[in-house]
Image (cartoon, rainbow, N blue to C red; front, side, top):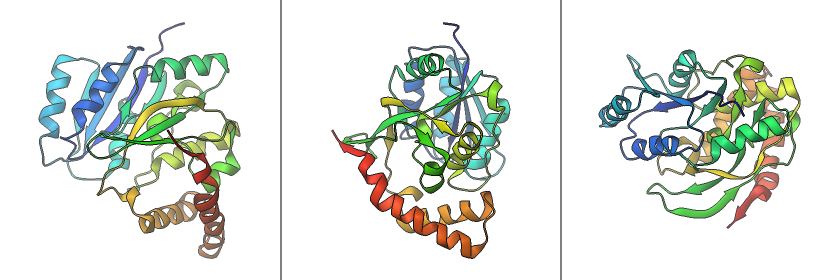
Length: 256
């Protein structure tokens, strides 16, 4: 199989505790033809010096810095603008990939004649302890399912650039990934995951995703701004979102 170039999009902000391990998880990939584009959002800790050290020793790591703190959306979009890969993948500065992640996904895409896939993933806590929890997804994910719930872990998604083009990333502070996957599923209608865990998602104590109230606010904003629904319609749709989030999605979280 031709060793396709994969562009890894990585925003960073005050990630000194995690960024080295994240970069190592990319370097440990069995598929070695990749570029990792790290864009720092004005970190005030040692993130910059850590990344610069890696970049000096590995030319596949490309490092850029924003002039002002602008949020992960702009950092991701900036990284995307630099990407030269055949495929676009995402890895945040505190998450980890298993060594076979890229190899298995690229083979899955080839075997299934697909242009987009994702995978299951496991959860770890802030210091890296496994939480014995695997987040799975429907065997075939439809646009309608994705409309009511983001089943695609950002750290697992990968798409073919030549098929979709570079999909613009929203400048909003949260849920940019969901909008990317919605754009993809609107075009291809259905997608299948690699049915195994290929990554580790870190649950941080101060993350926005840890707040249920913030989750509701940001999802409501997606229905308003991305889909263009009015206030009343968005509120009605949120009922379906809440049902899916509270009743359906937990069925895909497995203890291991």
